[in-house]
Amino acid sequence: MTHQDLPLGRHVDYPREYDAALLYPIPRALGRGHIGIDDDSLPFTGVDRWHAYELSWLDGRGKPRTATATLTVPASSPNLVESKSLKLYLNSFNATRFENDEAVRTRIADDLSRAAGAPVDVAFGLPPIDESAAGNAVLECIDSLDVDIDDYGPPNADHLAIDGERIVSETLTSALLKSNCPVTGQPDWARVVIAYRGPQLDRAGLLRYLVSFRDHAEFHEQCVERIFGDLITHTRPQQLSVEARYTRRGGLDINPWRATPGTPHPVAGRDERQ
Image 1: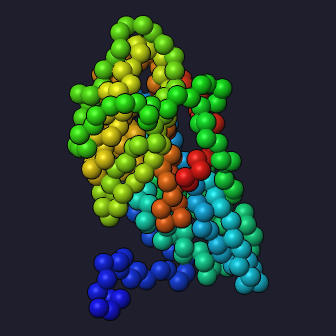
Image 2: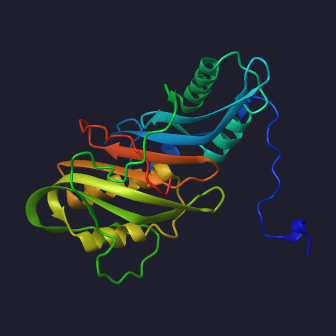
Image 3: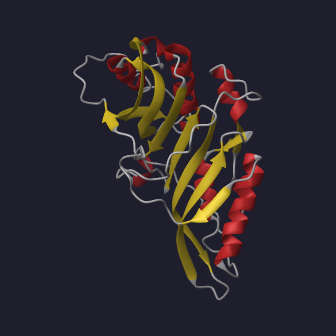
């Protein structure tokens, strides 16, 4: 058996020069239509925060420069950007000269804004590792619950229920969210943080619901919007925030956040798995 016969990723010709055409926008309305979300009247606010770990270019004299970056795409933008295309695009900077670092940051911001159809913020550097992802709230993990689970897809909102009518404010988390990329079929792993005020959630049902994404193929952003919509429909929270911190793949990780309008933006941070 030769290496060509092995079940590994096929050879990809990486770009040898900067090329903004590598970015592949996907209309958000396509995925939102499947989950009953009207793209013209969004029930949430939010952003998709990308962390880029592999970014390099040449300075004006041909010397390589390296950086990390945080890219923030508004959830109200008409398009999301497919992750592999973003990886290839960022790699197209590797052999291209720029007079200064700001020229690189501005170029990325302009190109991503054009692809997304809305202003995208680009900043060099990454937020710190912060396992709490809850600000000053007490974070409660539901992964140790003693439950039987045999539902791995498609996502089953029938598992969601409330535990009485008592109104509570709490922040729950699970590191057991897994779905699959609809383009490559590769697994996507995430920790999800759900902060809400409303009737108390049945935690066992919530865990079963999150695990029911396990064999499901959907983009990161759409998974979070599905979770948000299902919780709104089935548990009637007065306020809701859903953030998923996906593990890194191809030098990128993505952290979609969706919340009821008026909810403060969570403090940006990263998990150890990222």
